[in-house]
Length: 453
Image (cartoon, rainbow, N blue to C red):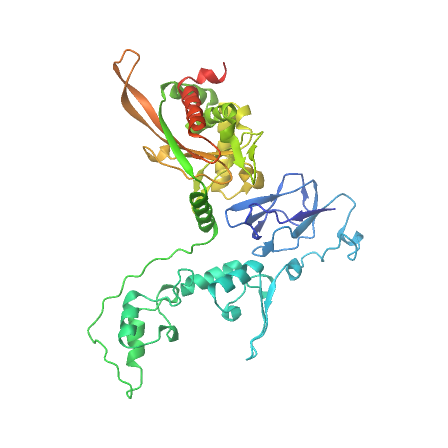
């Protein structure tokens, strides 16, 4: 019997949500087959079978929030059954279909003096409650057994605008009228989106106050106030923000850039497309190949900074930033220096499709040693990309533009030029090392035969 656990896809991940079970009880699966689709704070990904077997003992249903490393199902070998193993032994498990969340780490808020029943929160939710200074008693839990989860706190916070640091969700006009008439907004119920208090709500309250305490109200009709559309700052967007803020605050980055003559590279790209037939070969595949070659010649760019040492990484795994509907993720092309352009194009197409379909696997996002961010398809002339820790470098690739340049005889010729800007961690990479990397990059793009000579 093999246990299938909720995997930890990211360093900060504490739990995942079961979005869909791809298999059902009794299905025969092979090692690597997808079992379930789960959602993390970054992206939706597939949980794969750790070995071949028969699916049994599914512990959680669709929509359940599961702490990482918790058992979500079992894989049985032929002849094995769940009932054949003692529930009291080392491999004890709950009955199929039951939920293990009762044993998951949780924090209980005891009843208050007026008899409000205790509520149970996940560790993340408990920390958020403490940070926001709110009472969880009025929050409806959506987790197993009514447990309050991170998503419940975020939904509650979005409705009350707590995450923005404002404890009453009200329009500026409503606040002005309330201030003029000494009305406490937290006693009112809003009629706007997400329960937001409108000016009309405050006016209606003033009109219903007892006559013994009259309050002047402007009888003139007031045009409806425009409301601000809010997007919860959670999930992938928040994870990206935290990572980028950490990078900007902790990494002393330097930027160097080059303009590359793309005539030879575009000619090679055209030959690759012809060779591939109806299969897509993007220019990114050629760029990944040349970047991997340049990294092999400049290993400091393919390193990480540890506690008291610089780690020179043995593998060259290039991350390729991909824009998806709700943010940005960086699938990884493993061992990019060992693959040809056509193979790289095939893998880039596959991983990009899985990313846009929310079908990424854990290996798709694991182990990048360097990242390429290509905005050329959007017509961007030049830009700076932010380093993704613990990597020490990222390459910003811009659009190919036609420009006049001087040839060897000093005569103007109309060539395709592309800007490449390198951002690198100055703690690890000196300016001269970064310059040598860019020089090799230019050589590989302008003279692709250098890679095979």
